[in-house]
Length: 112
Image (cartoon, rainbow, N blue to C red; front, side, top):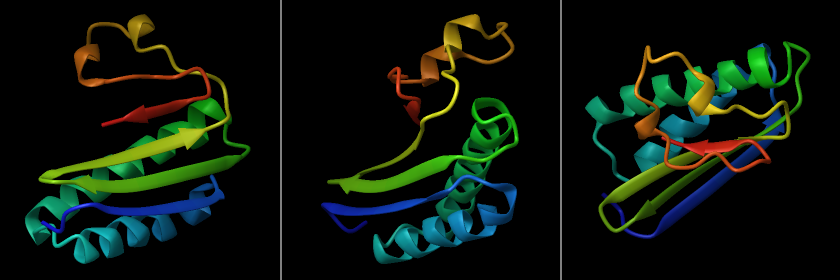
């Protein structure tokens, strides 16, 4: 994995833009030398996070979404930021573990 790498994409958060987001993640993974087996999982996670933003934070009406891809040493982090309705993981029924969310600042970003 390439060390100390950062790329950011800021765009309209609409369903029609999801392929562009997936392509951004794929390109960033390639540039960061992340193996192909992990790329698919990262693409899927980011696509799902962005779809949740579109559906829940923006109510399907769209809004700005920023995807930041960072590599620091051997760790990769992708952050999706929006300015829509906030998400509180503490309010989610115990169907999933809320402990996997590192932080959810009030402006609406989360790291997975």
